[in-house]
Image (tube, rainbow, N blue to C red; front, side, top):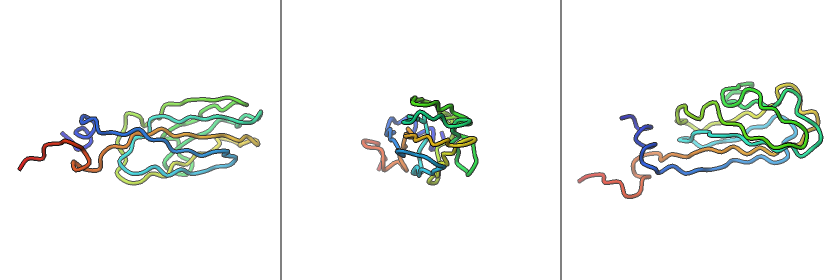
Length: 131
């Protein structure tokens, strides 16, 4: 059994959230290592839609987490991560949150939901480590 499978089966994961408020231009958000991005939430606080939607990736211009999530005027959205069943990050991640075409004067709150897994067996309470 791989370490990732072992940790997933132990129930020691913790749900966490990263937040960016009033985003009006391309931005980045740091997610710690040993985490798995589960969902992205957007709340557009203006009457201007983000032209082309918003993409989220682990590289500048990338779309490996969200390809093009529509963000209409004065609306809220939830999108599952394209990586939700993927691998747990072994290093810290920088998420690039970018308009597909243009921000169009929109002001968007962004929340990234992720699950943090133990970094090693010592982070799992009550695990019998033997003699």
